[in-house]
Image (cartoon, rainbow, N blue to C red; front, top):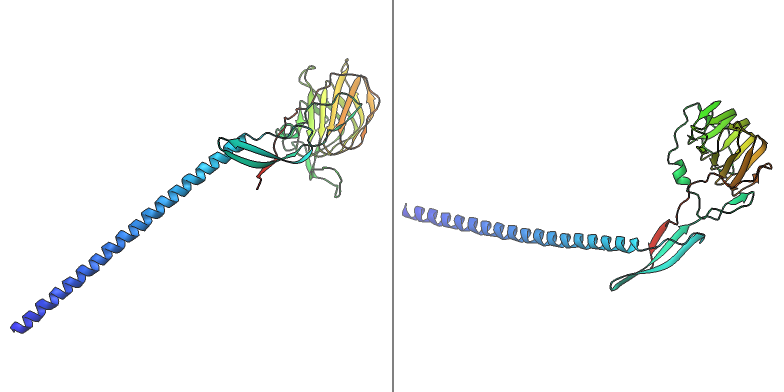
Amino acid sequence: MKRCLDRAHENTRNSRGSIMIMALFCVMLMAYLASRVTSQGIALSQISREITAGSLFRNHIRSKLTPLPLGSGRGCAREVISDGDVSQAWYVCSIDSAPLRQEPPGPAPVAPFDWASIFSNAIVCQTGRTPTARRAFTTPSAAFDCAMPADVHGNLIVVENLRGGTVTVAAPSPATAILVATPGELTMQNSLTLSSDAVLVTGGDLSIPLLSNSSGRVIYVTLASAHGAIRVERLSGSISLRGFGRSTISLPQSLAGSQFPLLPTRSATLCGISPAL
């Protein structure tokens, strides 16, 4: 009996020893894992700080880059920026377009037209929107046509092509210049009548058989097309015309003038930058 009790006590001591060894092993493993997690956390935190610092430095360097001067044309130039003891080379790229042709000839705008600001307020047609019948084109044309109403009051800037038969556009006041604009085409079948100075802007072709003035004074009309042809066949009333475009500009003889309403212009901007290796 005594022998059995002694053996039982010995087994109990052995079990307790095994349990303590296992517990010690678990504690050491947990301590190791905690140390690894802590080390990795510190490393990731350091990497995050370095990435943030690098991003701030690059943004600071970029803020010192200067756009290519107007008239530089399309291309890239290498520019070295220094900040303290650090210097970095960048390629600065521009898409500055060639100046638009002007008819009749006259002083050219100092800066290029800001087409984006013109169409920033464009709306979807509210007076009859239909898919365009054209299936092929060589200048910008929208996928839909907007039927112009017979009477337009105020500016008309839409995202569709503008199509009209006989249309009259009235300004809120005689001193206000009207803006009619489309990134596509503006096509009149018969005539467009204006009562004040106006700016007609298109991305594609602009075609008006008859442009009339319903006021008793001279009105000044600026026509501009980013990529299409400009064609006005006849005038009625006292009108002075000036056209800006890259394609054909066909205008009838009009009154000489210098008080034309102008399109908004933009300053030199960057279209892209890339670190120079």
